[in-house]
Image (tube, rainbow, N blue to C red; front, side):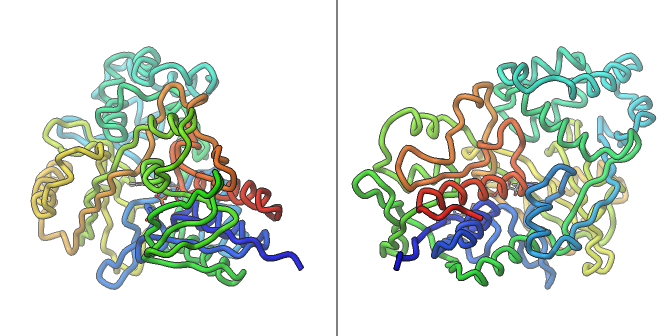
Amino acid sequence: MAMTKKAVVIGGGPAGIKAAHGLAKAGLAVTLLESAPVLGGLASSFDVQGVSIERYYHFICRGDDDLVETLAEIGLQDRLHWKDSRMAYFVDGALYPFLTPTELLSFSPLAFHDRIRAGLAVKLAQRQSEERLAPLLAIDWLKAQFGEKAYRVIWEPLMRFKFSEHAETISAAWIWARMVRLSRSRRSPWREELGYIEGGSQTVLNGLGRDFEAKGGRILLKADVEQIVLDGGRASGVRVAGETLPADVVVSTVTTSRFRQLTPRFPEGPYLDGLRRIPTIGIFCLFLRLKESVTPYFWVNANDPRVPFAGMIEYTNLNPLPELGGDRILYVPQYLSAEDPRYAQDDETVLRRYCDALALVNPAFDRSWVRFFAVFRDRYAQPICLTDYRTATPTIATPVPNLFLTDSCQLHPHDRSISGSFGLGKEAARLAAAAAGAPAR
Ligand SMILES: Cc1cc2nc3c(=O)[nH]c(=O)nc-3n(C[C@H](O)[C@H](O)[C@H](O)COP(=O)(O)OP(=O)(O)OC[C@H]3O[C@@H](n4cnc5c(N)ncnc54)[C@H](O)[C@@H]3O)c2cc1C
């Protein structure tokens, strides 16, 4: 009788859970290893005074098909809700709603002709092709489409917020793909609809984890993989807690920099060179539970020299979280390079500085509104989409037989997302199952 093939998946974020689930469905004996005490990775939740809430905000767009399919597969489709969403700009001391054509036409930080040009530019941009935009730099392209002034007011905050000092290197295709993704969520010129999952992303991640275990899969938490074992040029297992766990196939879903640490004997060549040159950026995010709402908007981009962040997300304006009894959840994120000294700021200092800025956005805001706060720091939160991503992105199948890798850079020019990571995990499972001689179902 044929022996059941063994698979090890490293990382219990969305990509890892999905890959492990797919491999278990294909009939492999799968072990999922996660270094943290909980599943979820960047999409994990934490305890906020008895309520479990995501460390970072997560919204869903129309077109996030792998996420929608996964919810349906595990019978949780009823937990996905869609809601009208509103966004605004805070520019030099004033808040401007910024979604509908009427709001755009009344956006006084820009001259009237710049507003018209910006509206047309968004429409025209969506008709462009990825192929043409990939080699262009986003900032040059945005300035050419929108004009210098509109670039400074509308786009610079987003570029600064997402990429910090890497903004000058981003491919125009990345910003185009973001426009296309959000445009799919437009129900009409006056309405944008975003999705959220009741109970947060952990609803789908824990649901998938349970289904994985029901299929015979094994989840080990607090299992920090130390090394991927390469034997005779092939992956043959992993080292964890000083022990070797043998495997016929290994799927890594950790960041490319962590992957390189796990594979000190990975063969030199173009693949490893590619992994070495993918820049990444980290995230620094203040989480607030407040007793009052700061603005009626889900998303506010900030462009004011006195405000030390470029955006804020009042998550309860999308997902009402009734279990909070009317309290509000506000995320104030900032993407920073791994070496940025701001990671070292102590939590109280961050809270004080950000509260001062929130009082500029809403003069009624008072520190006494804060019922709970936390500061999250992840030094590797997203890969940077450079202009050569079409040729430089590493494939899921590595040159080492039986070793597979997923990373959000494989989604470029699209931004990373839970749905995208599910897609990568599904494909990794398909390839790894085939390598083990058991095609994924
Ligand atoms: C601020 C912010 C906002 C976001 N907003 C959205 C949004 O609105 N919508 C959306 O769809 N997506 C959003 N995302 C993106 C989403 O969270 C990520 O795309 C997704 O979590 C990536 O999943 P992953 O499995 O690829 O990686 P990760 O979530 O990074 O998972 C990797 C896992 O590997 C584990 N690990 C690392 N090293 C080891 C080791 N040696 N051994 C074992 N385990 C290890 C880590 O602990 C982690 O759990 C957001 C992300 C951030 C940071």
